[in-house]
Image 1 (cartoon, helix red, strand yellow):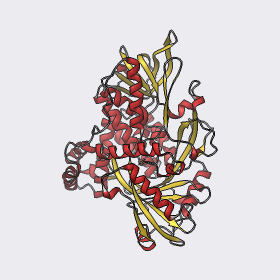
Image 2 (cartoon, helix red, strand yellow):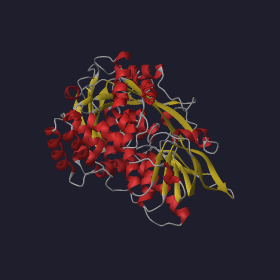
Image 3 (cartoon, helix red, strand yellow):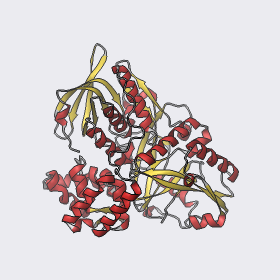
Image 4 (spheres, helix red, strand yellow):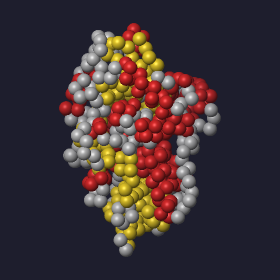
Length: 523
């Protein structure tokens, strides 16, 4: 993946996509696979906003059954099943526990019926994906961190997990392989028109300040939260903020779905990269979309909600890090943000520009296919969707479990620890072989970057060489999520910046600037 702003010049594109999150990435990939000439630009880094601030889940949305949104749940579950098969390295199964307490808002029978419906809508042929019930004693043994006072038993059910930022990155890589021009740190300055119809846009290379005109027959905005401040699209949007906390390991192999006592909202406790993700909140947002940060009230809400269920309470000093993202949903008059549908729609302005509103990571592929269908209809192209059931760009060609055994054997020979091997496979898929080959040349690269996080130096160097990194934050926040998984000091950040400075051609002044930017995540 090489960034090349010059490729946007002197070409006529069929489609210009503005916004490099999950919807933009899927749209670019799908359109390029259909043979369209595609350009996608992102004013920051790939997945630098909402698409890297999710709960890291690929799920049907069990809680949406309460609002009778069966269509959305069925759609998301179908996509979940497809992704588990098409991207076994990128999307992996994760079971969730749901305890039933004497005080629970939803009782055992109602929960049983809901999980039966969830399994039915999933239509999975695999018995291991079905829900199960556990007695009080067995559920407590399964989730020993939970308080047992009032516990009556509990269920487990299946969904799936991912690394959201790398999900987007892999789709961008696939789009480039299929011929798309993909440029991060490229800001759309204006939409150009002729006769009242959009003909392309003027864009700016944020890295060097250069401007150019991109000619395109069709334009689609997949800009997420920025839609809420665009004159044309703001009337269609409702924006809410979701906050997550990164906590120490709770020694969970499975996740928990719980209900906050104060307001009845669902939240999760999820194992991720050896840590625990706790979230999310869901509150209306009216602030500066360029300054989205967790507030003390969000932290207190999540800790209080979790501690109601835990034997040993988490304190504020236990929080390793936190992150916040904005959800853009269809405009709704419902009082509670949690009651607003997460479904998606496509709007079109008078000048022909299309706007992608709402949606969720799990079902983004199908929605993006609808975007490209609309683009193709406008262009008179009849090629159908090419992304469904297609193996992901980095998926191994061999049967996945067999391939994993061979990779694990090779990695063990190079002294990579077991947990880091697991995450290497999930992060890089078939490219894991290339990462491991670098260790053969330099055995020191098998070491972890930070002792508590299963990420190694070979991975760091591979990312900076091959994954369109512009800034240190790109590398340590999205290519590897070190900035949210560990508390890195200024000295540690400086050491990492200097390690990659030769590859990125950074002088000492640039290193200091890059470290200063990252410190806001490390404190």
